[in-house]
Amino acid sequence: MKLVAMRFDGVVWHHNPRQIRFESEENVHTLTAVQPPEVVQHSGRKNVVIDGEGALYGADCLEQFDRLLSLFHRGREGELSLPGFKPVMAVFESLSLLAQPGPDVLTYRFRFREVRGLAEDKPQSVVTQGESLWDISYRFDVPIDALVRLNPQVRRPDVVEEGTVIALC
Image (cartoon, rainbow, N blue to C red; front, side, top):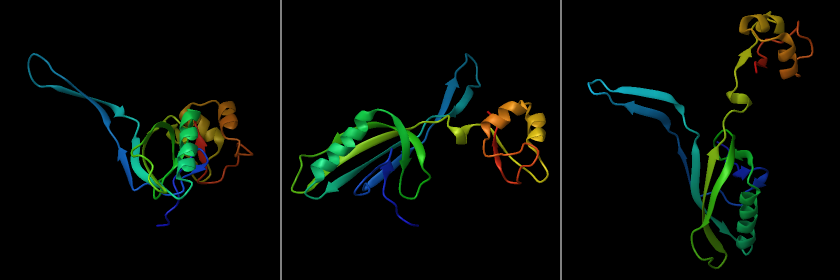
């Protein structure tokens, strides 16, 4: 596995964090009744929380932290790339300084929260051999005009290469 640098919204960490933790949870509720059985209700997964701790090294460690703090204060979502994991869209939720700066070292803690509802979470279809946008339009009851608008990579609605991913909404 090639270890890449952690980055968020175009800003690269000089040193990868020592520790990265992914917290995934499901929305599960138990409804109790006067008489058993209890009813368990599952309503999907919560957004993943990604947090960790690290250290910034070098004579410029305070400047490195200031860059991270500026990134945090932007307050917008961006692409979060972590070593060994698929990039996700996230918001920078918190940044903490853990210790007084020492000679050329500064420790910090961070937390990101996944932002879902992006293109990869939206319904899509993969084109099979001989299938056109017209076929997909009919199968999923999506107007052909909408499919053409949502899929600018398809030049001709009647000729679509097998394996092409088609956005449905």
